[in-house]
Image 1: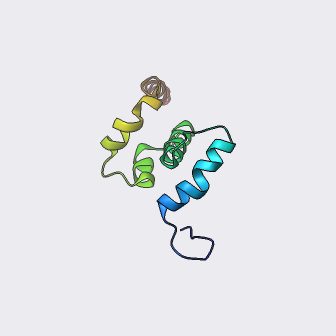
Image 2: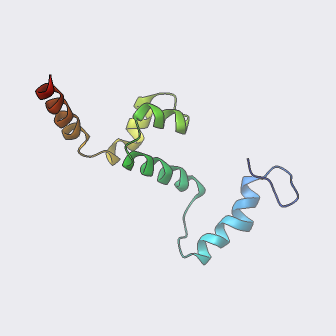
Image 3: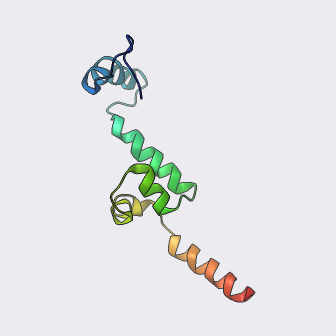
Length: 93
């Protein structure tokens, strides 16, 4: 997806040493890792109400269980939310 300044494949170690690490130090967010961006994206998706199966596919996880094991702690109150929606649906029925 991303290439080097000369258009060749980007090598992670080179990118990390030449670009990423100096940028995180300059931004005073070191030791932020590149993989932390993936976790942040998943966290924002959960906060936005992403479906677990959508999130699973987005992250390339083998199963929704894997996604829930890793990110389930970021979904507090989901049971209450589901119970509330079921209650509303039952009242309308």
